[in-house]
Length: 198
Image 1 (tube, rainbow, N blue to C red):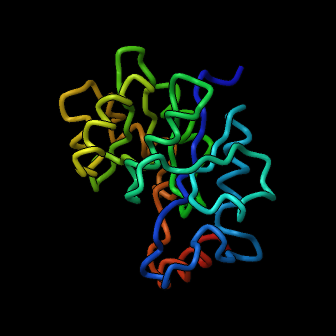
Image 2: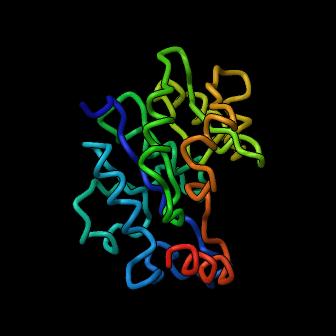
C-alpha cells in the first residue's frame, strides 16, 4: 500500500552556476538528470508533483505540474507550493538534481512520519537534510509566515516545531555511500555524477 504522502520534485532553481540552464535536463549517461528521480518516485507515490516556474518544459512527464505562489525563488517557496497542491497531508521533497536518490531512502523517511511531527529529516555528517525530507501540510501557516517576511532558511521555520530526525547510523544502513544526497551544483559535480553512474 502506498503511503498517504505525495512526492514533490523541486525544479524551480535559478541554476546560476550553469548560466541559468536547467539542471534537470542535463544529460547524464544518455538520460536527463531528472528521469531517475521520477522513476523512483513512481515506485513509491501515487501523487507526484514537479514544482517549476517553467511547466511547459515538463509536459512529457505524467505528473502534476505546479508553480510557486510566492515570487521569490527559494527551496522553501517550492516546499510551500508542493504542500499547497498535494493530494495528501504529507509531502516528500527532493531536488531535481539528485539523480541517485534511492527508493530505500524514500521509504525510510516516509515510514518515519509521525502524526505530531511537522517534518522528517535524515541526518548525515553534514547535518540534517531538508531537501530530502517529508513535510506536513499543517506546517503551511508557519512557512507562509516566514516567506512573507523573506526568511527563507528551511531549518529556521521548523526550529520551534517537532521534527523527527533520522539518526545518521540509520541513514547509512540504507545508503552507505550517501548517494541519495549527491546533488549537481557545478560542472564538476556533473562530471562526477557521470562517473558514479558508470
